[in-house]
Length: 405
Ligand SMILES: [Zn+2]
Image: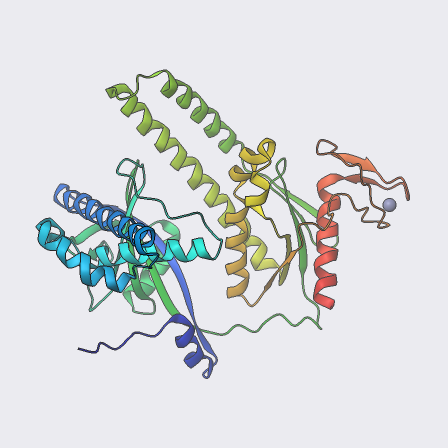
């Protein structure tokens, strides 16, 4: 049977553009409270998803090593997946889409690898603290009610909408948002479901660069998370003290873990504690990034940031920990899509552009600037600069210059 291929997002957008509309795709995460029975089913599905993922990855590596051929998803499904289902009947007891998406995830990992956006695909580990599987929407198999979410093979699972998601939950109930897929995640602190949803929105008018618009330059840093310069004033934003506190606690927990005998009961208990604390800190950071990016995207049409090649920078070990911790990349991702939704623009300036060393008053370059110099005076014009403030001015100017050409 020739099943009709569903349209890609790009193709759908092309059709919608004629009406001045487009798709907006995003995710919504809810905490869920499965029953014991549902937990057993989730765990089984996680296991099967992992098995298929690893099995396809292993077959694909083998095919390449023996014949230098690529084992496609379709070929694996046809030749191996059905055989595996016969060998291991429990694979038939779980949601079939979770097995399909496992194959697609391997493909996606290869795609990222070939595009140099990621390392070589890794096997999924049974004992990592975060386990997920993804299932797809078809014929109403995923749906929400005000109190629960219906998921394939699980039935209704109790749902706890976060305050901020209540309005969105309403749009799911009235059908404005269309569910595409659901990812079920098990972490140290419980279970969540992330829905990928689509809605049709009017194409927002892009910012008119010939008229007045608000533009800020942002210098992302280690000491201060972000210095935002709007052409007149500076605003400094830092992670709250609560994150420092939580990190201290985490360090202590990790110390205790190091003292535990590996494989013992205490070790396992301590490991769970460490994982919970990690998750907590990641959530606090995410929350901070969301709030700040929303504020900035609401108030400005153009935002200029440095194009950070984070992978390149992490090689510098001194900075590595702090940089990956700071989560600049997450923040910029949030900022990019929020601006995009509002018709705004994110301008990235070259990372080799010497934002810290350039005197923003006269353009003189202070080549010898070191990392620990927080303030410096320009030898040419005498202006005294705060390192981060000066950088944010330069970033903003460079962005405006790029927009003008
Ligand atoms: Zn100067």
